[in-house]
Length: 256
Image (tube, rainbow, N blue to C red):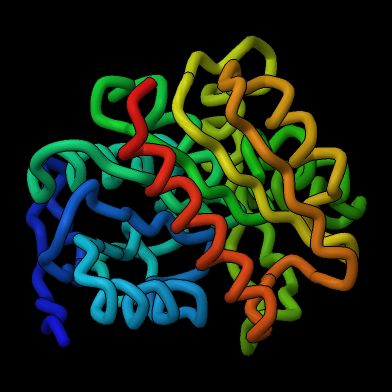
């Protein structure tokens, strides 16, 4: 079984991106995590084990202010996390990649398709949340959130997934509005598999379907897991993730 190596990538912005990599066959599978998540989550760990067993090249990492990477989460923005993704692609990976993006990672994948179209062969998206700042987050803010943002420039958002609330800053919200991708077609012709939970209360199924309609790929399949929530981390859901990824990798090796 192949060893997973750890490292830290210094960036031009002065922070370090923590990463883990398994050497193997290409294309390299790249894990793109969610907002306020990290590379030690259930799905990322599951894919690491799968990659070790199948001899697949795989890399996962933490965005600025997430997990083992340096930086204060409160200073994070879509711009900064997008650049983290580009730094990983440009400096640590040779050749083509398949992106596996969860929640905000689906937004990052959409941005990378636009920034590095020649590198990306396929997409596996799990409850993808492109444009979530303007489309999902802001519309759901209570009055006290808008008051805190106007008064202090930051609101401490409660979370059911963490021990306590985390900061949402006005600068993060303003920056997120700059990177919207759902307003025009996203040019991508490779295979796409989207997994979405029917009980997802964080990212509605309709949002995932909207992204599907925006991607130009003809080989784009939407898998609805009726009982699934936003995390899609139960054993049968992880098996569906494996099936989707293997399907995309098989399609990448077929002549177009």
